[in-house]
Length: 221
Image (cartoon, rainbow, N blue to C red):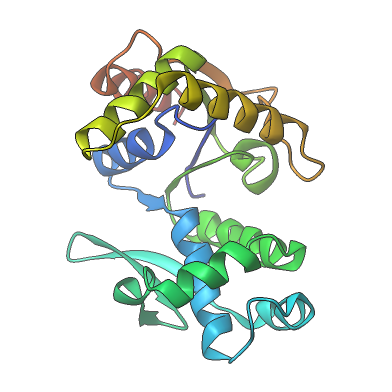
């Protein structure tokens, strides 16, 4: 039986950073769900489907075969067995991903593919509903959060380092609005799974959070 680790939580909590570290430490597959949505977008783009044609997108998405593997130490997204990493950041793919990700059938297909990955390999997966919907039987479920102030400050520092001039109050307001949307959306809202461990990273470093989660994993599997 494969080991599945689900890490959920609000935007800016550091889920992807932590998930990658935990996966690397355990030699598990880190499932980049965002990259899978981009691979789906590439698949649809190759079929010549318009990003506006939601009906055609809904009809065609079930044919996509998307997986993730590590090859020579690099995470590789496979579309029909082809390494499509270099193709996932093009403008066309980004535009298609933005539109197609909102089509319910696309999400249904990708959840199915993510679940298949969890059955075949030891995985660490992060998102908004991994422990509640995608991997409800995961052996370890983490709900990673931090205060709005801390998450806003992290984002503010990121933007400052890029040479931008962000307004802290605006970032904090955007995060609060995003939290509300995620928690109140009709399909798979963000919530803490009944058997998840709540981890508040507000006063913790990345290393401390990763170490704490690894202790939880080692105590359960």
